[in-house]
Amino acid sequence: MNKMKVLIADKLSEEGMELIKREFEVEVKTGLSEDELVNIIKDYDALIVRSATKVTRRIIENSRLKVIGRAGVGVDNIDVEAATERGILVVNAPCSNTIAACELTLGLMFSLVRNIPQANQSIKEGKWEKNKFLGTELYRKTLGVIGLGRIGREVAIRAKGLGMNVIGYDPYISKTTAAQYKIRMTNFEELLKTSDIITIHTPLTRDTYHLIGYKEFEMMKKGVYIINCARGGIIDEKALYDNLISQKVAGCALDVFEKEPPENNPLLQLPNVIATPHIGASTKEAQKMVSIEIAEEVINALKGEPVRSCVNALTNTFQKEYTI
Ligand code: NAD
Ligand code: MLT
Image 1 (cartoon, rainbow, N blue to C red):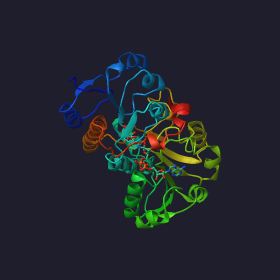
Image 2: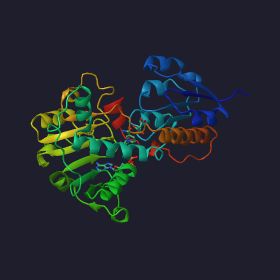
Image 3: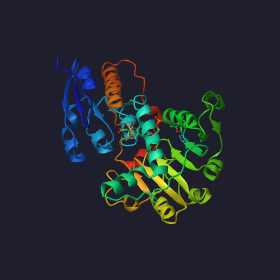
Image 4: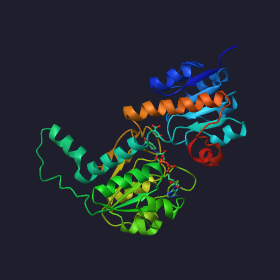
């Protein structure tokens, strides 16, 4: 009997790939366009992607896939609704990159308030601008965490260790969970009004698209800092740009953008913006764990065994309308 075939369309660490190869035939083809994927997808039973490949309705409808594996958390690059309509399982690897994304958030927070990337650039240009880079301390500042899921919680725990006053907003977690993590929950408006630094850790959904726009910036303290290591599109980039120009927002750190790569994004021209190319999950540890976690899920799905992280049940029409 022919082995089932798995297409890996974005870079995946060896460890997970080896697990799949023990059971199925694996082909790695990265950087494919939508048309190229549409042409070849009929040959495969499973497709594994990270965030670069957009798994559109067209690709899905031209396939005989049984499962789509997302080597990471966010499934906004997959048309989950189209997959669900065709009975295709969508599985992700939600637990493996939590610490990596949390630590990048903290790294960006320090970088932001102490101008570390700008100071590094300056000294490498032969300058000694000691007085230019006057920073702000994190100690006793209020950190507002929007979204207290896996990553938000880890950020909150560590920020408390830095002596920060941490407040959180998440309409979907219970008081018991918040109490367990000793996070003071607040409402959205209060978080916006009282935070010195705001960090976002929600998924990108219909509800969170442009969650932070002109109205929300208006409510914030003058001189607030913003960090987004979650998803582009949660902050309205035009509103962010205008508020950085007016200095209402003192600075922001972005790992994610509405359009990735962010070609000619005016935010990247501003001196008070620091940015990284969606590297929240890019640690050796996380990539190894993600590849194993997604490999196990895809193997189980192909064998008809139970999977842990099926996301089809959570689908809404958001993916179709905003990202694909
Ligand atoms: P999670 O599902 O564990 O947590 C998300 C939390 O957001 C949940 O607790 C949910 O209740 C909350 N939430 C949903 N809608 C909300 C709203 N309107 N307001 C406030 N809270 C809301 O997810 P996670 O693993 O913590 O990941 C968080 C985000 O980080 C996701 O967008 C994910 O894709 C992204 N991520 C990015 C990177 C990266 O490389 N930059 C890496 C990993 C994860
Ligand atoms: C995720 O959602 O897991 C992240 O965006 C990480 C990634 O896939 O690069």
